[in-house]
Length: 288
Ligand SMILES: C[S@@+](CC[C@H](N)C(=O)[O-])C[C@H]1O[C@@H](n2cnc3c(N)ncnc32)[C@H](O)[C@@H]1O
Image 1 (cartoon, rainbow, N blue to C red):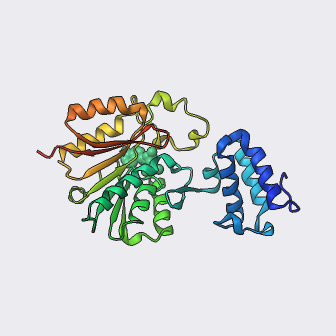
Image 2 (cartoon, rainbow, N blue to C red; image 1 turned 30 degrees about the horizontal axis):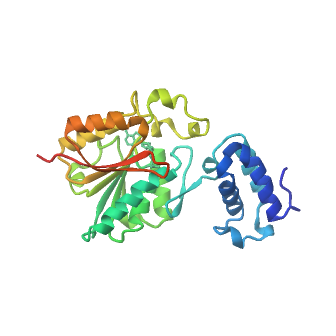
Image 3 (cartoon, rainbow, N blue to C red; image 1 turned 180 degrees about the vertical axis):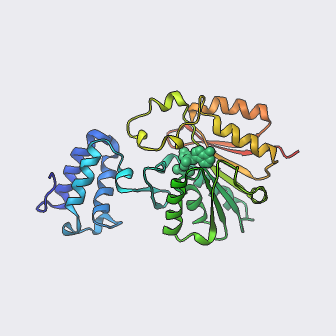
């Protein structure tokens, strides 16, 4: 047992930092704070007394963490946007990169004065972190959630309940649009979608920690384009009138732009993330 009952909170933090530094480098400080908060069931590190910290629990977490398991997969939660989401072995742990979809959609909504009763669809929802974060900020917005994984939808349901959004949400178990009513799709103003987009070859060489996320949430087929192609072709075929906010990655942008040009789909704008990497495109579809 590395951490015993006689250590102060400061000593515990030092031990955590020493152990986490070699695994997670620049994230060590943030992760040690999360572990201390989680082990004392507190959201604010400053308020924690030494005797509130569950040292046995910290040891358990640290033992798993030093073996390479991501922290979110050990404690079953991950911070995203303004909330802490439930996550598990069947869901992609929410990534900070994806917050740009929430941020941009909210900017667009706030620019447009007519933002009452917006209808959103979170396609490939996983934990539901995108849709839930958005409707949490827009009083009268409603969001549908689609995922092919029943396990992922269970996690999404847990988050909907955790954040008391039952009245503003509906869940659909569906392979993309297969079981989603077309009449419902016609009323959707915005689709937010972070589909699996890692090319299969790259997926087989991803880092050890990403392997803890389910393959179904990451592997986007030979060129990483399989899901985008299916979704875009379908939305063109039904003359979808709303806008789509897609998470993208530099790995697929060249193929993506070529495909959109061929299909006559309009790129309303593209955005880069805080590392200046292509991360978001907003699309509108030909309606004639
Ligand atoms: C990259 S994860 C995104 C999760 C979440 N939206 C986020 O941003 O953290 C992709 C999600 O797509 C789901 N998925 C994979 N294939 C699907 C399909 N054919 N139809 C619907 N969802 C699918 C996976 O189960 C996974 O939850």
